[in-house]
Amino acid sequence: MKSQLREEILKMRFPDIYGRFKRGCLTCEEAADVLGMSVSTFYRKRQHYESDDFSGRFDMRLGKSSPHRAADNEVRWITKLYNERYKGFSVQHFYEFAKREHQLTRSYNWTRLTLQKQKAIKKSTKGGKHRRRRERKPMAGMMIHQDGSTHRWIPALDYDLDLIATMDDATSKITSGFFVEEEGTASSFQGIHETIETEGLFCSFYTDRGSHYFYTPEANGKVDKGRLTQVGRALYQLGIRHIPAYSPEARGRSERVFGTLQDRLPKELALYKIDTIEAANRYLKEVYLPRHNAQFAVEPASNISAFKPWTHHVPLRDFLCIQEKRTVQRDNTVRYKGLVLQIPKNEYRHHYIKVKVDIHEYPDGEISIFFGHLCIGAYDATGALLKNNSPKGKGKKAVNW
Image (cartoon, rainbow, N blue to C red):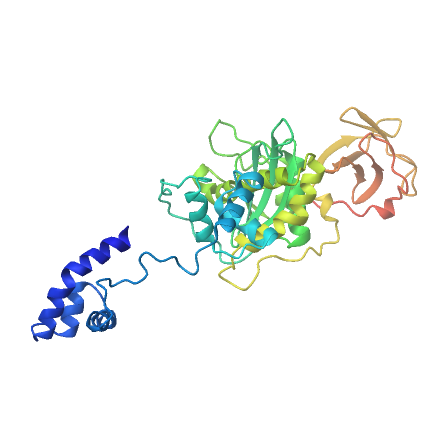
């Protein structure tokens, strides 16, 4: 319609402007400016107008099909593919799959307009909110975000799960991501552990004020920085600054990442008929996250990384665990969470009666007892003594710096 309207206006105005140009009343530049076109375009229109085969039409494309126009069967194919296999996917998400999995050669814009024309998707009419984005940290490893999102991540299951995502502020790279039934201390430790293990030790840790992160004396008030949770204690021992967020807007970068994850992940898990947490975690780690980071992560402003390799002599898991103190009973046992942990005989002491010891409970459920820096007992989640329980093989206790 717009092309036809321009053609009609040009047919009305061109003869008059062309006549004034031929009489010398207008220069070539002035005539082109009046007609709203470039000098070169006016020159081509003038040549066409002066030719013997001028038929009264300036735009010879009108009424003709473009040689690049998609065939009807291609339009039907892309529409059927979306409706039958990828219904509900955003256009961008669908376009990525269609290119990768089905060898689509058309552009994103062609795909979007075709789906809109076939009424497979609705045209968006709402613009985005005006935001003032916080500047990223210049170096990778300067700040790490961690947050959890409760959602129906696996559509095949009839209940919601929590997705724990740990992300670098400078690059938006997700350094750790996994599903758990409920967010808590253990999931926080796992995300920190995976990040340090794969990337290195980082400078600061940015989270909400959930009870496993901070003690908050008053609801919605300031956190008590003098009273540390298990996560806070572990970060303090590791020399990582813990920063609380005081508004949803402060976690805007994490919220935007979760928006993308909520739009894409459930659809992909449903597409591949994934119906267990274990399978979903494998897909997330092995397939989705590498692709997500390749597409959405950005280069940091500085090429110097703030991540430092973990080289401490104490195993990382002895920092990222629940640590509590106990007193050994007269039968050389320790009571912990309803379990009776029997300390085996060792070469260091005849007994440990009434001795103060440290309990380490790891995210995988295993438990260790430490006397100073020595591990004097290692147990599974049921309290059974693990085989090969030699203190020499269990490393040293983390020092409370």
